Length: 351
Image (cartoon, rainbow, N blue to C red; front, side):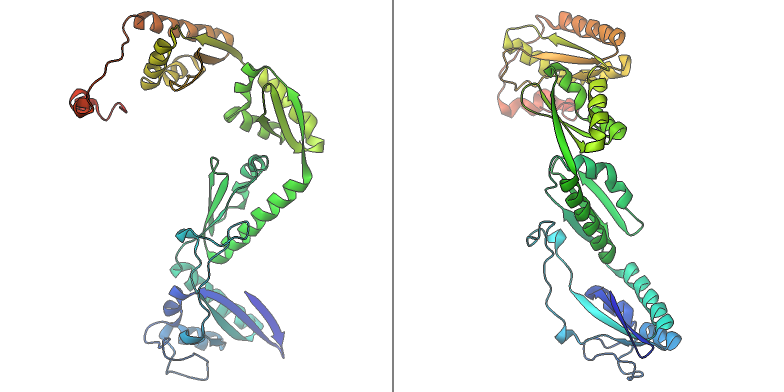
């Protein structure tokens, strides 16, 4: 939207999605065949547009379809052309309003309400946010949402999807880009070393807690390396929060019995019965199960929490393994018989 004042008149331009033009014109309008200046009293005016014109005495011009520019694709956050159909820009039509300033703004408000009620939801993404910037954007992005724009966050692909009113979405996208640019130039990092067994306490929800407490992000580097990102004045608090978090819980590594084939069988069974959820419900201990696809020769169940609760959880795991020793085997079954064997348990287990 733009405006200019000339001889006590103001000219406003609203870029309306093409699909909303029939609603702006209203019934009995003839948008396909003519332009619509206020000097034409009836021929092309629909009832809605005529009502706005009569109420505000503002001239409203909509160009013929033949002279509107072709549709173009929206660029991604990095300026490249979009290839995702959901991110393609709908053709917009410049609707021009000319009249005394208060009445022109009144007419503009009326048209915007029609557009908001009829326009399809507009979607745009801010993609490939730098990994060290993403936690800061994630902690602030909720403040950018509004009644006109919904935001959703994808941590895995490090992108934000914005949906809503076209103009409002564009404004929020620019705000996100500005935020990213500002963070890239203002935050710095510091490295430290911590035993790898404590790294469990610096990821996921634990890392979120550190961000909330110190406004710093923590990342696991190579080996024992831990990297803390933040604004220079916050780094001291960030290091303190990382050390406090790394030492806040007791960690026990329960090695599964071998040989490695047996360890993988036990790991598979623990995953199928959701042992981590069972222990969490009983003892409020976070349980990290090993992957049966691991190439390691030694698989461990990691238990993290307060020491008394961890000790109780260790007992649960030990007793379960005691019952399973000698009771776990792998058998080969023709794939054609899998459905028969699984039977009514097909929905329960992911074979």
